[in-house]
Image (cartoon, rainbow, N blue to C red; front, side, top):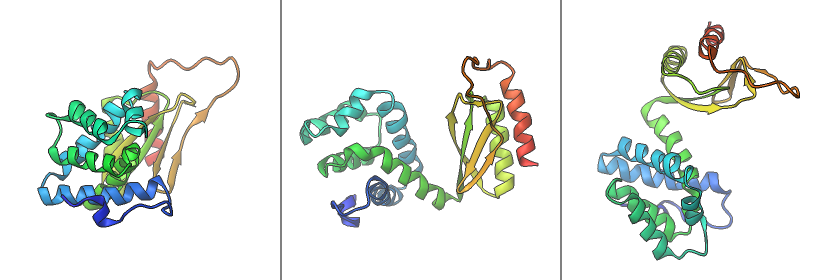
Length: 208
């Protein structure tokens, strides 16, 4: 596969993790497209970030630590992901380790999702609510936003306990805000029972 350095070698003059993420994302998606396994690679990269790095601070620290040498990091990649993940993705992670960029896997994932959305005609909608969405509400939001944008919608869900009685939807630079934030001292968090129905009603108001 083409290495990220074939696209552009990162230096101290680069703008930071976001630019690095875009650069390495282009390399990964290019290799995935050539292999005909783009969706599989994207799904597995999501798993690496969401199911492994975020849930295992020790693994994330090992990825980021300059005290752990390259060979040990590559052994960790094989031990944790080998057998279950696409060899192309494993090779890519090892390339990142060799370039001292393994701490930026999450930034690469963000770059990959942005590029993948553009490739597949999707749009990202960031939905913040006080409690997790249930399946029915998730489907309703996707359907209505899809109708409004004319595109397939990929939801990014964020739980924010301060959003009492509402939700915030962000698509690009557009924000639909129907939240009622209540931060007064001594007020208990609202019980989740019945919350989804009320959120659904407010969502209908947002999209009318």
